[in-house]
Length: 288
View 1 (cartoon, one colour):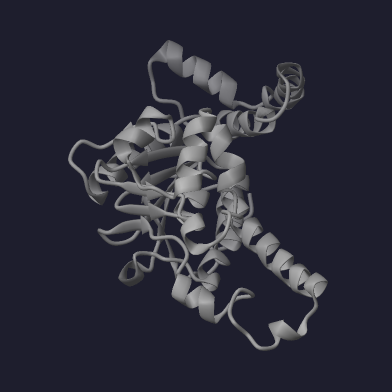
View 2 (cartoon, one colour):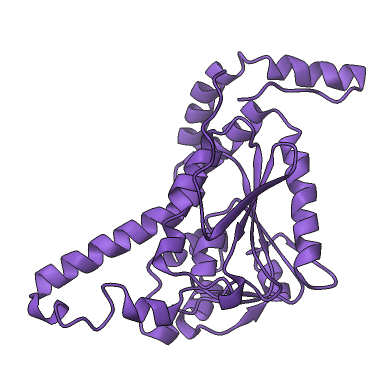
């Protein structure tokens, strides 16, 4: 296999490999509680596209740098100065249709950047600590697994800044958490909710016992290492089929699974996994 291209340079996303085949992506603007400005979310597509096809990556951890936050969401001060929402005199010269077109294109591009996380072929665990507000919810619902520290505080914050959340929360959260009443509660009120409540409704699947980032990243590493030790053919196929089946019937899902596995069962991974169970030896899988 030819060498895979190097990861793209990023200013606001740190990429490390703390364990074999385990990538750790860290949102890196701790002095602003990892609040996002445009150039930050624009780094997501090239990085996650790289990780999606990297043979050296089998599982990904996504966390926030510093002790205070996964992310405080959108940097409202930056957005008010440098976005289609900013009070720019040139905007007032446009009619309604042209203003709407400008805004729609901006929102579409923003949505595509965050959706690039969801489209990544590799499983992603969000290791959440501290504050997870607004855009932090949009990002975390794009991940496959969410775990959090005991002291994490969440909020679907957008109504507090005068808009309906438009980067994915309102579309994805009702599918992640099946209680429509709870989803409308937190989205309409923008109220804070904690780790215990997030676990109770199924938004996160694990909560730490002592609080802080270190514990939740340690658990994320444990999970990612476990997944990275499995067949990459099996893991990536499982994620693909789960995502494809999300909004489709059982019949459609079964049909797609049959077609998918008719190709993927021809890999050496199945034989390797079965033989390891017999020999009681840890299997070794080729890169994918």
